Length: 341
Image (cartoon, rainbow, N blue to C red; front, side, top):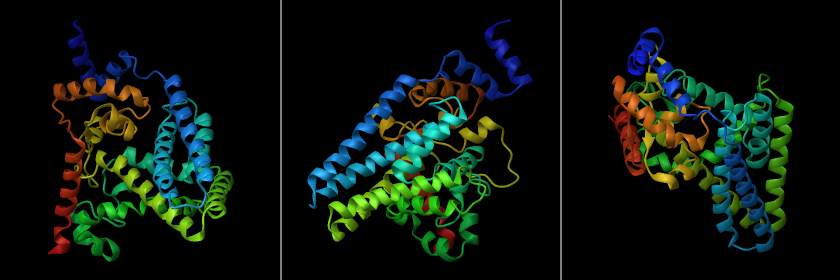
């Protein structure tokens, strides 16, 4: 029996995803990359520490706003590391992943690791599902014409011009992440609730204390606003292109795992620069199929996944960064039409 015949037989007995998973495993891509993550975390730690030293050295000056932008990038990159840790790309065990996740999430950037992990896990299980994916809930924006037709309150008011307002709204995302993290502490089901609360409190006290000790009240306020706004824009720009503007699913629509992940997801081309700026999230299809795949292996997995999708007739959508935003914003504009009408 040839290899091709054997794989065809496997599809009949199992699933399309099982065959693809075997190909990824045969390429050795599930192996951990401790050296890569040691270097990546080391660079981030050096940048974070160097930024703090520069902040103290500069003192009370408006030049600090350059550091506000710098820390927006650093916070986003730390969040991307926390994302990889949560998916066990770095450590095999839950215990080690949780310990490091709490440090880089709660302590370093003021983001609840437990809250975010729960939300992101639900997103991965049901990407772009209008009832089950928290990332497409119509809290502020609407993601389908059906949501637009039923919208009331804030989503209805914003939905008219949501494509134009999308990037301005991202300037609030950093603040939203902090608020959601604090609100999550009221949930008794949140694991390590006391530890998470303590680490978040330490972060807030150190962050605000440093601003008020070094800067005048006005400069401290402007620094905070610039830093959090740019961090929000960066976070939204890294996470949104993978799904926004792609098909959404509704209750009752059933797809197998491979098709559920691939058909609702978009890849973004751009080479090594985009790979690092987006933390590998530009390979969103491969990431959704294999969340524990280390970031540097996503580029190698892409041709295997793309070729296999072509082989079994599953559309594989990939575009450039600017085109991804054109598609996403165009979709937001179209689905808001019932409100404008």
